[in-house]
Image (tube, rainbow, N blue to C red; front, side, top):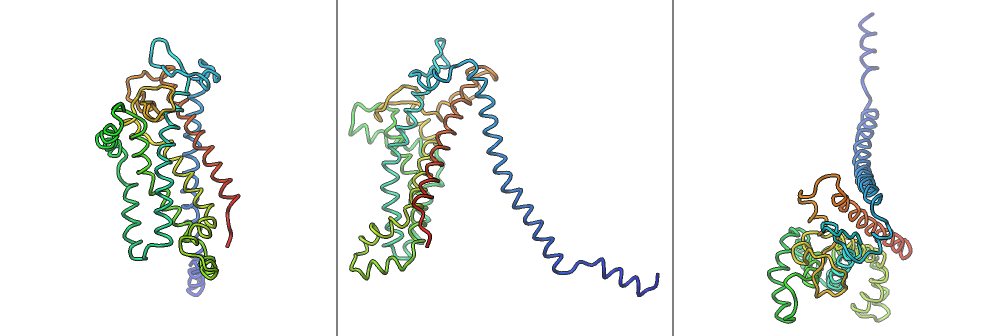
Length: 310
């Protein structure tokens, strides 16, 4: 082979800039696919484990008894497997939290979006989001050692463990979820809608409440659904402050156990693996997953129904 032929062969083996760029893009695309697939695969694996272990539980306990029973005492000699006491504790604490988080978070979002000076917004918003970075166990002890004594000074008959203080502190923790997402949704509303409202003689408050807020309702509703899902799945606050006594009550002044608190109680390692008591945590966990799934489906349809395209 002549020298000229060798030079031509080397040039033919060299990649062109376009080929190098295409190769890099394929590598990046594959990495992004792995990242997306890993999240989906993790979710599928979690669901598989929950369903597989729950099937073993429901082979010995009737689904009707599980869904309609009013006593939850799987660790007692006279075992009862009604999930309603845990559901009531979860729903009551979450409802109290929403009564705190939704109004305060929405007001904070309206102020940051429509009234705050840009420099003030850049300062206040990060500090508000710091609330979401505080460990939940700190919130739990704050509820038990600070909020509960304050409430007991107002309501002397309030027990040391109660759902009210747990729900109030949980609401404070969830405020950044509501305010941040709602503020982003309202900031995305076109300026032309605001200017049109001002041209009609509306005030800034009227514009914020009657123009901007309805226009951003899809994003705001998504923030509310996310906050509810966060409250339903909260663990440490309710474990520390609400108590571990499962009882069917809708009174926030009582103590009660939530689904997550029970899972923590049983997962400490004292229950033998493979027993019916051990399988109860998977049945309770599957119930919690189904609750959050329903909430996310509702949020999806609300966002789709009220979504505005500008």
